[in-house]
Image (tube, rainbow, N blue to C red; front, side, top):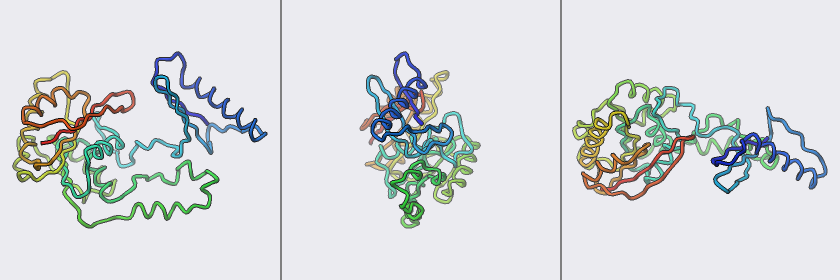
Length: 287
């Protein structure tokens, strides 16, 4: 089976490319192996993936067989949520490590703190590991992947550090707690409903090493959004350690950068990421 995704303005569809690539692969197998490969679109043993960006085409084998960005713990969600893979990437781009104290003051349904807790525990977030496509490949038939996954999922309960998740909306906190319980990390995260202007009463001065969050953004109420950002960076200046960082992801960074500059924060890293067809910006600030 061949799957295709393209981010181009070319006049062809993914389905057209899948047919062409499939025919090309079958013809090559026929020429080199002297037999015609059968195709099973419903239950394929091997999935080829074609990715086209601008003038470049990448061909690979899908070792997974399903979307790794989907998280089974994410039952209670919000429209503004980011995918678990993007939340994890945000943490790693910011240099997050298990010994660092983390705060997400816009936690919504809890994706960022949950991904941090799973990373801290050494957990592999693959509840569907038995469905991996590479398990059907002949070169791996003799491998003991059960032991492999058990080793990766071995819990390390030593030297746990603070992972704090807060939000101004109580229903967000309730959703985040439920998701964390499903992910089996609810005991590793401190949840609380806290308004931004009260963060300095919740945490000690210079207590937090990293703030990672997706702040609320509304293009229909820019004045209120700007006020929220000003309150956030004012509080962050107090609770963040001297070498601490702030890693933010948003559809627009302009107002966030303005508020950060007022408090003397400097930009250390910027990235563009895509969630489906939605463009998101990542910016890392330092004291």
